[in-house]
Amino acid sequence: MMAKRHIIAGGGTAGLNAIRTIREYDRGESKIVLVSAERPYSRMVLPYYLGRSIAESHVFTATPGRLAQLQVQAHIGRRAVGLDPAANTLTLDDGTLLEYDDLLIATGSSAVKAPVPGADSPGVHSFWTLPQARGVVAQIREGSHVVLVGAGFIAFTILNAILALKAKLTIVEIAPQILPRMIDRTGAEMVEAWLRRHGIAIRTGATLTAIEEAGDRKRLRFRQGEDLMADVVIMATGIRTNLEWLNGSGVGVNRGILVDDHLRSNVGNVYAAGDVAEGRDLVTGAPAVHAIEPTAMEHGRVVGANMAGRDVAYRGSLLMNIVGVCHLDIASFGAWDDPTAETWAATRPERWAYRKLLWKGDRLIGAMILGMANDIWTTNDVGMLKGLVQAGSGLGAWKDHLRRNPFDIKPAFIASGTTARLLPQTILGQPSVPAGQVG
Amino acid sequence: MKVLRIIPDRCTGCMRCELACSYVQTGTFQPARSVIRVSPFEAHTSYAPYTCTQCAEGWCMTACPVGAITISPVGAKVVLDDQCVGCKLCTIACPYGTIFYNPQTQKAFKCDLCGGDPACARACPTSAIEYVEAETADWLGAFAAERAPRHLELQVAGAEVR
Image (cartoon, rainbow over all chains, first blue to last red; front, side, top):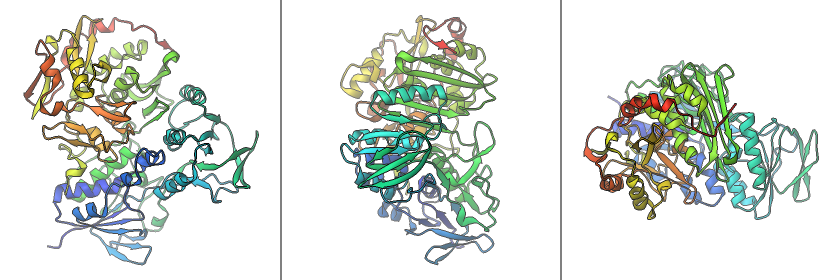
């Protein structure tokens, strides 16, 4: 019998986790071909490369040697441009035609710039890929004025790095608040106050209309308010899934590639994972695109197991984000903005602490937490809030206790038996193997 | 494998485990840096230590984007300091709340079973923490549930609820 031929399109977190998981099960029996526009690296760590706390070499998740050890035939620098599911073939941008028995589409997403004149001029950066990160690294100097357009999660991941480079920072955001898709208005106001206290200028509700050349600087124009002069402009104005190349292929797409609980598309031997996949949301049960690292990782592992011939159903991905700015931690989980949920919020302004808990009956379906990184409430409760949402524990009388004492998470977590509910949970139905110990 | 078995009924709340843990983990007596944390129940009339169960999934380990968490020879999930970049993803991925971030070192830290000779178990004067061959388990759930009725009567001071 011929060895099974797997193609992994995309060398990001989802693709690499799929490869490792296939090898965890088959120990090299199958043929794996990786098609990746870039050398595999972790987007999550690019901010630390920007801040010079790690070397560029630290960002790579698989060196050529590691890929060889995993017996992966890699087409690096190539993109998939066409898919023929009837013929089981993938066409690459250099015309190469590859045949597969099954295919993983993990082609991720790309940064999108605000559609204003000047956005594509040199010196207006995105911060999404490694080459883009290199571009920003080369531009920021001590004392540079950096203007960050967009105040979402990606923008926030690079704030510490920009400050560590001793640059002056202004954030502009079109929405009325910062982090509009991660925290609510009250939390955002606390974070804005915190950032201003650390010397960061913020302009919310600001619609950028143009970026103009001004000598060796840039002039940013807005619908209202004064122009801003910048040495470096970084646009973190959103991402879009890389799906265009699938047009006409017959693979079913909504906001992402629609996948079942085995992460299969409507084409039985074509899987999707990570930012391009629209799979089950753990909390709502509805299909959702969760363009976050943990979802890419879990998706990748589940697909890898299924490609290796196992039968692994996925319970769904939990939306979660955490970002720290100047030692203030900001995190949200699950249905943190569900308008239909019963919602409580509490602040302790003197400690920069904020909590929001969202309920369906006596189950926590979402949470928001803000607090100092060295505050015991923050460090103890971040994980437990995730655990309560993930386990879906019925909290009974603890619900009312948490209404009166929203900072007393730990006894509720422990007494509700949440640990016992969580311990049997594994993504693959077996203990996990460390990434470095496969192959 | 050998795990930390917690027998909460034996805990007196003396906090020696926290002191011993922080000393072995950081070289200083700083309970705030301990990865075993004693929780009070029922208005400080009973106590129980809580730490990483070394769960089968290893949510912290699989979440790490750079493979900086691995399994040590004694079976503990451990952070490799030279690999950890401090992105905190492990701290939201761990549903037990037992991996932490140190703002000073900018690294994650957690229970590593002290390489097979856990200081907390050695320091505990009442054997409330044992290092034994066992399946890991929810050591505190029943103990805490039993004490829930009294805890639920308490109002923890200070929160402005809106």
